[in-house]
Length: 133
Image (tube, rainbow, N blue to C red):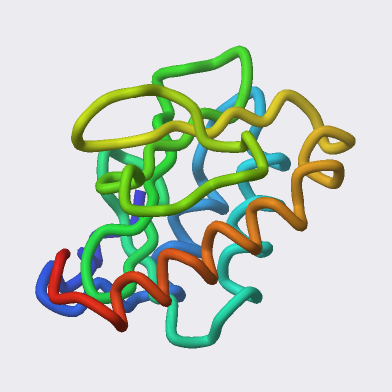
């Protein structure tokens, strides 16, 4: 693993995340990369860093993080995901502080791409309308 660490105050180090991903080992590495690209392309104000030994996304606070210890699919946590009005069904869980998303294959990612983009845009709208982070 590279010796360079991301600045935890900016959470804006895509070069570090790309380097991290080049050495990352996970059965769903390609799928994680595909989801990463979708999120980053949805809005250029989204930044990324490493949290929980996986890519993490930020916009005015933690937006989403991969959970790398889950090995049979891509598992993401959306802290404060309860704030997102998800009518697509992509986010699940009834926790007071988070929602989760699951992706099981490249085909599943493509089927859920529009819903993921919609959730990312709604997160940004919520963050722009409030000071919650």
